[in-house]
Image (tube, rainbow, N blue to C red; front, side, top):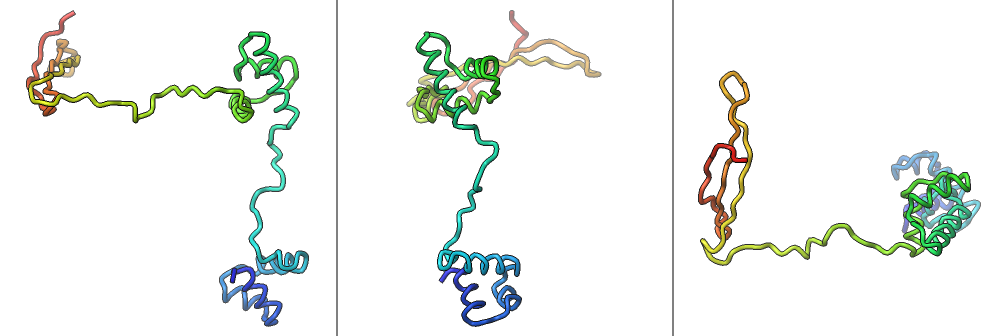
Length: 182
C-alpha cells in the first residue's frame, strides 16, 4: 500500500482527524489537505504519484526558432558556406532578429542529426603503455631547468638537472646537475 493510499484511507474511511493522521505518519497537514482535494477531484488516480515535471518551461526555445536553425543549416551547407553554430548564430541575429546561444544551436543541430560527432580526445582504451620487458633494455632521459638562488634570495646560476631512468624497473639510474647549455 502506498503512503498516499494509506493517508487518504485513514481520513476518508476511518474518519480520523487530519491533524492526527498527519502527526502519526510524519507529513504536513497542508500536504494531506492537498492530497484529499486531489482524491475528491480525481478519484483513485490520486493514489498514484504525479509527475514533478513543470507544466510549462518559459525559457524553452520556440519551435519556430528550432526550425529556422535547421533551415539555415541546410541552406548554408547547400551553398557551400560554413554552417557551424557561430555562423548560424550570426545569421539569426542579423537577418532574423533572434538571439540564441551557440550551445543551444549546437544542441538542436545534434538532436536533428545534422552534426557528425568528431571527438577531440582519443579514448583511454587506445593508449598503450610502453614499458621495457627486461632491466636495462631501455632507458629514458629527461632534463629540467632550475634557477639556483644566492644567499639573500638573489637570482643565481641557471642549472639543468639531467635524469636517466630504467624503463623496466622505473628506478633513477643517474641524477646530475650541470651548468646551463644553450
